[in-house]
Picture (spheres, rainbow, N blue to C red):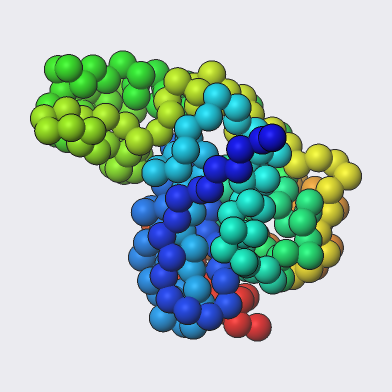
Length: 259
């Protein structure tokens, strides 16, 4: 009999269930600020760590089919139905597949800066940099940042990645992500939503105006999968649109969920 392991989450507020899924190499804590704002608006917000990320379980198997099944098990364990789901990047792919596979469990879907299409692997330098960090030598966050800067130029990206650092024991840093598996299975992150999958309930795609993840050519593909969809562009924002322009992002989000 297959063991059903439960994803870790941070639950905020009371009301209609609202699930938020982080992106690749992220964690639920990345969404704590927006989660608090949604809780203040009358939602029970579930900030979820996906497998091999954050405080959730590690497993050698990694695919969107498994990530969607993990979420179904989570919803059943917490007696959640008629949920609103928001997913960013990899989390958006999980959210799309979950909504298409289990539409009876979802009332509204929000996808942040990712489309249903295939994406080629583009995380090589980041994964190489994380793999190269030697925590027998690195003893502080500043030293970790310095080591990673050899591979990752952008300070904001390094800050995001180094949120995965934690003290595994006194004086010993480690990463919360299952780096070995994520590096081996990184091609899975770019996989397309199956061509036959559709979801016909209200859907919102949010994209950053400086991001290349959702282009004009992606709009017809999105509409083929999601018949009741709005695509909204957030100004002054790239791929991390929720962090780069949180005010406009949240306004677009709350307008959709409250309408």
